[in-house]
Image 1 (cartoon, rainbow, N blue to C red):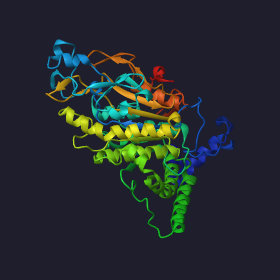
Image 2: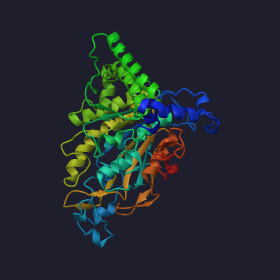
Image 3: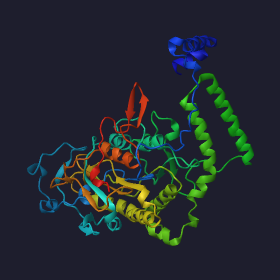
Image 4: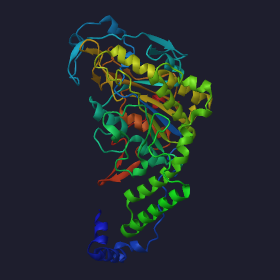
Length: 472
């Protein structure tokens, strides 16, 4: 409890009486005489600093670290020097497992797509056909070479546990346009990333802003069906809990934990009606389902296709931030320390058609212009082998892409060296990505702060620059 709560509740509350006496005196500005403003609902829409371009964000999280030189950053020199020692070519950093093999060429060819002529690997033939809508950043860098810390950094802007996720920050800054669904939804394809649910938590922000995890399948949430025989009985139970919590607030004053509990109880009640309607895809046409790949022979493609379709439906309903995690393919996440070809092909096959279907569907429905789609992992891979046929972690260069609201499609931004090992042109950080996301949503990243532990903290910490080169 806080000091004020302790003074109020201990020894018959005489300390609290003394405190109120002091606060009512002129020496303390007669604080108690001032009329307190009612506290707004935490999820109600809020004004923005700027004119927003994006209304919602869909974050396609590629858990494990996709190899940039095998996806969106072709490096012909790797083929010419395949099998040679990297130590003879460039300075080699220590890696996660430090099992450094020979230079490894990409097992896939690259083709040029679209009017822009963007080069995309054969891993992504469907996404490649959307090249004119993509802004690929080839010069991303991360601060951490290990999954857990890198995931915290990508999601929360700092590489340690306990900070608010970017989805929580966005809902704190903007509120939600739908009071019957969470403002921040994580569609769990089967893999929760290293670091666990803390990647999606609200940290020191009120719990109303934390991510809600929707599992794959027809029942994405536990207890979505009411246990009470009638809605009247359930409503009476909720009213009792609300009165009890508000009575506690009357005794101890403002307490975010209690206020968040009241808000979350009410939201859960409304979700029992809204979530079944959301996940009921019977109203979608067969052509739409086929576009996403729900008729695929690969069950993992079916899972991700359903998640992408649900993401579109969540955006339609005003949800601010939707994150998709990857399905659990036989080769694990994109973390191929061995058997690169098999593992990357399985993961790419699961997500390629559904992602392209999502982009096309958003465009067809007029939603592409105000929905920001981001595709990213936590770091990249080495241009040399780990062992003989895998790639180790590489935080010094990796590729991501953005599409949709406010993004200049057909753009390649930044560059790596001839091996794809280090970013050398327009080096871009995770803080820059977060600053750009907030900018497109109409928020100044330096102004979006929360007072905690004696200072104003923000998602971009003390860094972050808007990536002007990818903006329309």
